[in-house]
Length: 127
Image 1: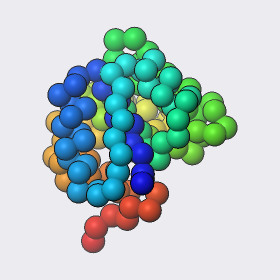
Image 2: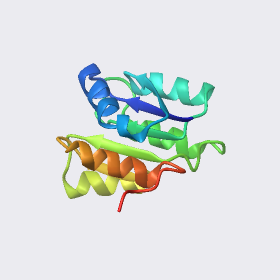
Image 3: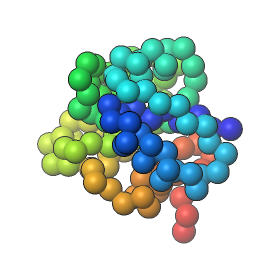
Image 4: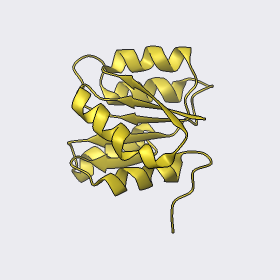
């Protein structure tokens, strides 16, 4: 079973992302409400993919990406950033930091599902 970590300071957004990804089938969702909580979870457990907001009140998403990419064990972990900052500069910043994918909020459920399928090992995009 694949394990996904959804990181967003909004519980509503965490729940909405999980609901959008239910069609993936056998996937276990875990949640973090802060960047620091995400780092703690990532340090203690293995995940197959992270969905990450950038704007959070403590440790921001960019710092989480930097932490992940600095760890040998996590270096190749796919990270899909979902953020309200949809401009080209923000997209370039998170991709340069090491994010695997980028989606601007608001997004359609099919968009996040397709993005996750693209990066989740063993889950191929639909034709």
